[in-house]
Image (cartoon, rainbow, N blue to C red; front, side, top):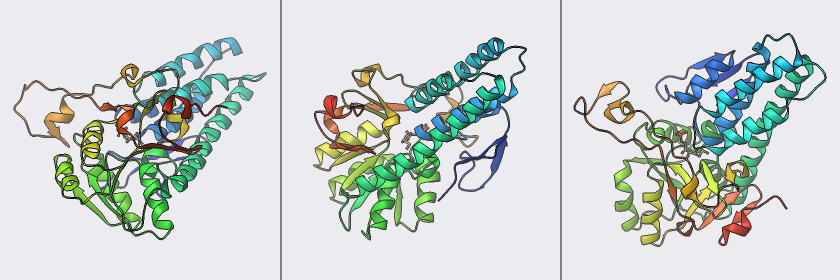
Length: 340
Ligand code: MRU
């Protein structure tokens, strides 16, 4: 399985996702600033992976704090936590992780607090691995033998620091000896589908066909797609789900063509504090991501650009949400509250 990141005791080793698939480059990050930058520049990306990286980054930040007292140390630690919370706004896993790390900052001495933070980061990572493995197995039961699936963006091990969500379900279906094939949308502007999803699926020996985003309706209407499965960055209490820009379009097309539309996500992606998707903050990224492809300009200089990185799919377009605690269907308002 691809290792998106690995904790090495005093640093975080990441596989630089911005360079894949041409270059498999690992970077060792030994301070919190480099981890924040890697998240912002999407060298680490995908909701669960962002949360895990932030947790390790906070542990690294704690190890770099020079403070004369515990009080001073905790004040500086809060600033480190705040810097992570400001790195990317949409994936709620980031905020779950920063909250947990802040709460884990306990101990009689600075050394003890530092240790508690490393332990908590490792726990968050372990939980994501376990959750993605479990939800993948549960989701695989929804996939029939011979299914032709369509997925968007990248929701595999790279995006989760675990087994994967949407791609995890597809991998688990293959492990159940189901013959599955996949359409991967390229996912403009940063091409996570073309660069990462195809790379991961080919590595797993799962047949994949790369299509541009605009081709999805063509294949759905021609009955070439049996189900759509995607990940999520934040799911509101009513089941509305934010995911990579273009997901909403796919959901509408799926409904129009009578195709099931599944969202696979660990419960760390659920935000019960938001009653609907209208409240999910949508990240707006730089114009250059749209006007350029890997540094090469493709649009006239100075053109006006919009670049929302995510959209929200209303819950009534979602056939089911697959989590490690079960497969949830309407009414989501009741089903998503998995605390009981
Ligand atoms: O901007 P990105 O690449 O971080 O967006 C990632 C996605 O939208 C994924 O589909 C989502 O995080 C689910 S990952 C398991």
